[in-house]
Length: 424
Ligand code: GDP
Image 1 (cartoon, rainbow, N blue to C red):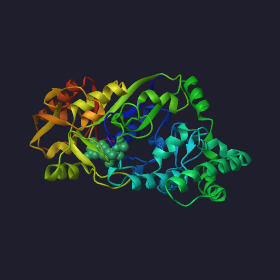
Image 2 (tube, helix red, strand yellow):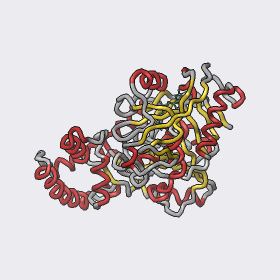
Image 3 (cartoon, rainbow, N blue to C red):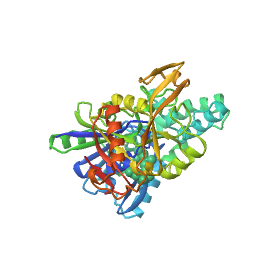
Image 4 (cartoon, protein in one colour):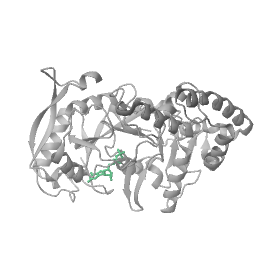
């Protein structure tokens, strides 16, 4: 069967959550393959509005199997909270329908502490971490110093492993940062409180995926953040600490041989970015405030105002290539309805030369945007449901983007609701 992935093309927050929620109808399994609870998807459906951080967005459809793959950073404390919130709103979470890979590693309390300690040490040179412990977590994972979810099923082994990790981690906590030491008992009691309740959900999910594939079921791979935040190909060092690219989905989900045929890249009709780092298309002052308000651009996790600007065609083309996107979903087109004219960033000017190519990260600090101005449509398009319902200027805007990024725009969304979408 044709498996698919939904990935971000830009800096994240492109509206992937709503696309997964919409497209899960066509899939039997949804897998998260990287990242942790450090970003969020907002999903609006008939059950309410949900800010999902760790749960896969297919969770609202009980017939879909939802998996947190081995590449995910499982923050038990936040996951439990999120599971409770979702259940309270009437979405059941049964182990037959929600599963955690036995090979997914657990974010431990010291990861969050270390994130905060390091940002404090960096002071004004900080990276704008969400302080969810993601960078220290993935660093430890690469150093083979994390606890995998499956270890919870072997308590004797777990105690020994925790003991060794505590001895090692206390060196960093106390000698590097001068922070208080932790103890094995503290960590074990934290695991008892927050990780034990997750035990029924822990499975060999790689096997579940292979069996689903063999049975002809369709699998959807769901990314967190966008191409420009990818650890390897993003705007280093202002990236996340995992790989948000579709190419990583097979590994991060435990099914390395899977073939992903459809890679749907999600692009917002304008740009937004959370945290520090170069953001060439950025608007400031009243211009930014108006767009931020129109698009309600405040972080799903932190509530902090996002940086905003017009769509950046240089960065978007790069993201499309990096993701190997086969089609695009353009979201939030309705947000631009207030503008008389709509600027798009066509090229960058770097040291006097203009370029279409997304440059090496260091050069981004010197890049200035070169804009083209397109006409606005100045009317409410949130009720449009077909391509022909859209005013000509809105169609022209979409067609202009499509040509510039050289990838077919299959979906255009004009509102947060499930049905506020145009299929081309
Ligand atoms: P994600 O992490 O990529 O899913 O992005 P976000 O959680 O930031 O989602 C984007 C936000 O925009 C959410 O609040 C959505 O409900 C909302 N949204 C998604 N699509 C549209 C749209 O077409 N129009 C409007 N006005 N809002 C949208």
